[in-house]
Image (cartoon, rainbow, N blue to C red; front, side, top):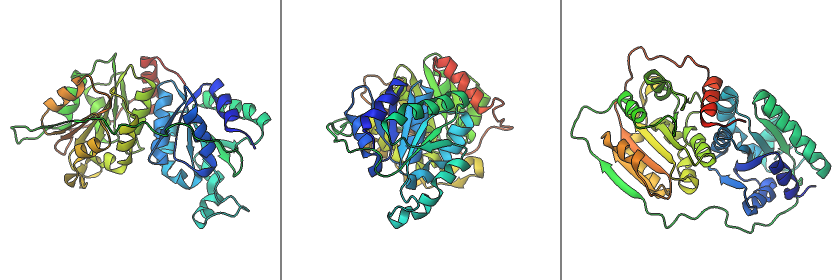
Length: 384
């Protein structure tokens, strides 16, 4: 058995200062120690996939990151592991507990995942090893992890067994308190009945976003493809796969780089898929995070099948989750005000209605995802 301090401080010496995760009783000592410690950060995510994407965003911003989860929730992280971290080659350290390990009595819901946890890591091509359970094993294990992450730009996994880490008491508030935050709420109504196109909105964002000061993260599907077609700039990141994770990735980047304005261009289908991240952004996000949701009430790139977003008041949800600004409407001036709003204490949100459809002969990015990411990181001056 080890002390939480021994692992976390050894990891800190190697540059790991950002932690994200969803709790497991095996992980409680770690979580408590990180929350108690000065100059370490823990983000309590709503699910394991968002935790992985937030850690990936922080890594892009130059902060080595650890994501912690129970293996029963590992399935929630499969999409961002395989279509975000793997595709873009983003190294994060994954600590997964091993509930339901063969030969260990546990609850019935852990039985199958307990049997396949290591196989799942293998299938996702994540090199892993057992979590170190002796003090002398910690630094060599961490060094192996870091060496692999730096050489391959891939995640590395530790699988933790029950009773590995001694108890550690929580001494600080677990999460920031934002209950006194007042949300700026405003509706922007257009006098035209023609409706906005995605392309016109994206062009307006480009025009208002200085390349040197802004990062634009475009959600998967037509949004990223249209942004590329309109202007392929070094400050752009075009998400592929990992649907719904643009906002959690953007949160990690915005926290790591408060000097940059991070603009997340989301979609209604994606936002519905990962709505829990609204609460995480509202709690942890700063005023440099701008979350713009383009809503055409459809999964446009897969055939325009309807979403349920026509029945959802996203700006009310953002307000209830603690965003400092929550605008909605169908007028382009919403973007002007959203991007220029100053003197706020938290993240900004805009819900903009647009039409379905896309430009003719819409291209796909001709630059590969890892190249897009390396270009962005070079542009903002970070490295893994």
